[in-house]
Length: 122
Image (cartoon, rainbow, N blue to C red; front, side, top):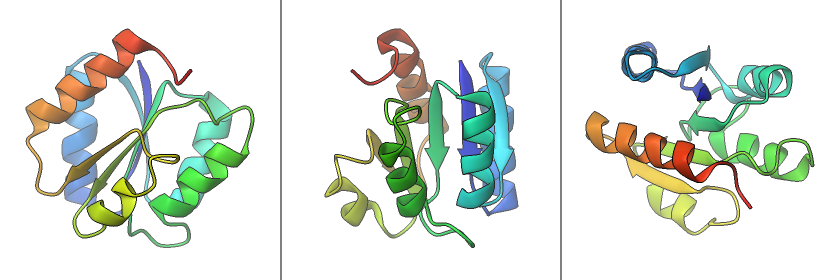
């Protein structure tokens, strides 16, 4: 699967990218939502994994922009968040799945695999 990871914390981003690549995925990385949106429009990924609190554009703003764009609105979005999980869960229209930090990488990889089996949002 082609995945875009939007995460401003370098160590978390690096861990995600390495783990996803080792699992066989093509991963594109962005340090904030605005950069991620540009990458998403360029590569049209199968899945987006985003943090909530990021500079320039939050994960919430990224999800809103994707859902408003007919070319991107069917791409599943997984939120990984330290403090905003409850807020994100209330927005089922934006996020397909929410993981609270810290999360078990094996659980995230399992969820990513399930998105690959299901395909994009219907």
